[in-house]
Length: 471
Image 1: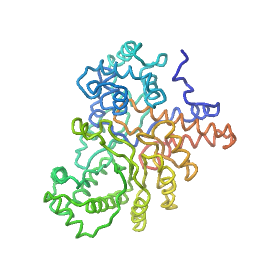
Image 2: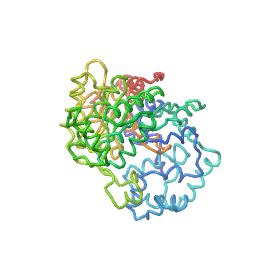
Image 3: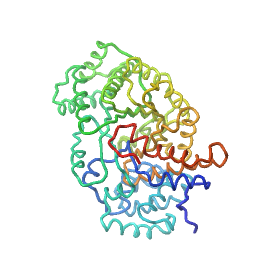
Image 4: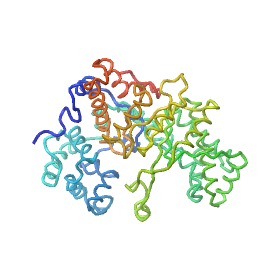
């Protein structure tokens, strides 16, 4: 069998091969947005087998297993680790052209030195035993990140989180830094008063503030924001279907807050007014401290109500949403720009039809001071595959400045997902290499290669203000 994950995987021209191998391949990784569990990195987690690190919590794989007739028992159920692995192996011949086929074999090659066989039912036993040797030797979370040349990981954390594991990890011997990211979505979720009030009680306790009024809520959030900053946090994040924008007066916000605290359901307009106010206030917090804000727009979440009730969120029942995104996003950014409170901002879209809108939107609010202050985010979730990455590169290149792009991230809960950076780098180099071959870019490898190095690492190191060396 010809080697599938070869040294020239995804590289379709000699020019692409030069760019990848001489400029991209050895660059370190700044993974500025992930969902890795901080406790597992701090405690240097070890796993007993491939299934535990590969399938537990991976909704990408669960979706495809269900699609191919695999029972939930083998996805999120109580089947043994080996049974789950065998079921995943059985679907591989049916997911050709799905990014999971690429990702899975890339992970087997990079972390387990398995690049001579393809995963399927016939060789599942061989692959299971070959990977087991690594786990028997004590493969750990630190090992995986260091092997991938990861310098920094940013996790995703709620304002009520103690960040105890970030503190613990900072005193460890790991070569990889871990910093928190402020994700205050729960502080805006007034559409469910019961859950919201339980959350506000938690926030009140950790901030040591009696939250009886709307201004108390802001005081508590500012206090937690300060705490996150003290532990190295330099990014915030929001997961939104759309960017809210219906302004409200201070009195209206106080009334909405009191209404929800009394257990009453707010109207849809009141919900959006409340979210708008907090989104603006969170941006002001970020701007004052020089943080970068991330907006993840367009996910239609938890569509299968039966499975959501049974399994809970984030189990693989989400889709691309088709909302109109531009108008309210523009109003939000413009309001902050007018009051000089617009922080550095990365905008990710989940619907590819929004690519050009986002690529042009960021150009409206660049300030002429901070290069690439507003960023079009990398291909995200359903778009972090070859086609989605290429589309994002095309939109940003044609309508913005590709050379200021801060590059890829994992957005993952898996410690094996750092091959996503390699995948992105290969796609990027292939796009640029093909342009050189076609005469669309000059055949100047120093010029194009330095752009590649900037996108892979240097731009992120400079943009976020992390104390990291230039590569």
